[in-house]
Length: 176
Length: 75
Image 1 (cartoon, each protein chain N blue to C red):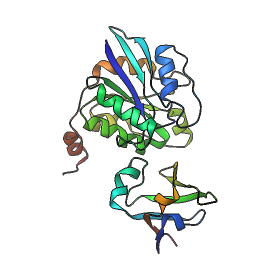
Image 2 (cartoon, rainbow over the protein chains, first blue to last red; image 1 turned 135 degrees about the vertical axis):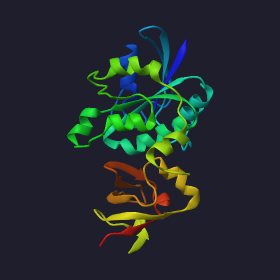
Image 3 (cartoon, each protein chain N blue to C red; image 1 turned 90 degrees about the vertical axis):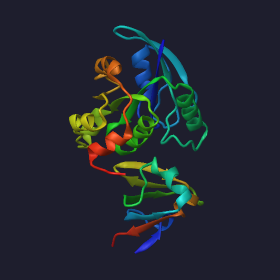
Image 4 (tube, one colour; image 1 turned 90 degrees about the horizontal axis):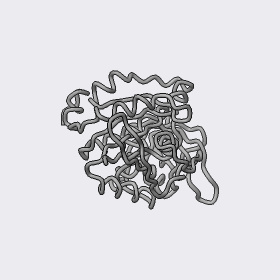
């Protein structure tokens, strides 16, 4: 069975995401660090079933505390896993940082721009099409607490591919 | 004027001038990088952590970390 890891910064809604996808009932709260260990669940996709793992939040792949250590270790152990990178759309910059780190490691990533409603309230405007064309991965706006965008996330799982960071750099016009 | 991040006053804004080399990667994931604009939100008493705003998000840092980041403060 294919594995999916839910990764992202602390307090972006990964556990709400997990509950939505699996129908489980993991504790959610509006504090960073609610998930310090991982939780496993199962989901039916349109053609295959997936095992989903709710990973503790981390700012980067360089672990600074216990919860982050768990996150980084999980990622390393699941080399072939698909990653749903959950980002708080209203704080997109730090989410992108982690997401790029994961892409850099060669994983296939689907980006979920969660808390889309909060971003709209804060007047944060994100050009999804441009983000898609730069990163060349599926990017889906979601609202985990209401369920918006979930169908698209599940459908885009098979479009997730591993992308070369070098190519992304070329597309944004940076040369290294 | 340059000062340590830990020495910024409430509501004061500035731009990150330099970060000690071994700290750079550690704070990069939290959005703190050279050239970023910061605003001091809270300083906790008894040498507790500080909270800064960066890209619309609040981030807390230990004072010992904030001591090692130099900020160019806006007048």
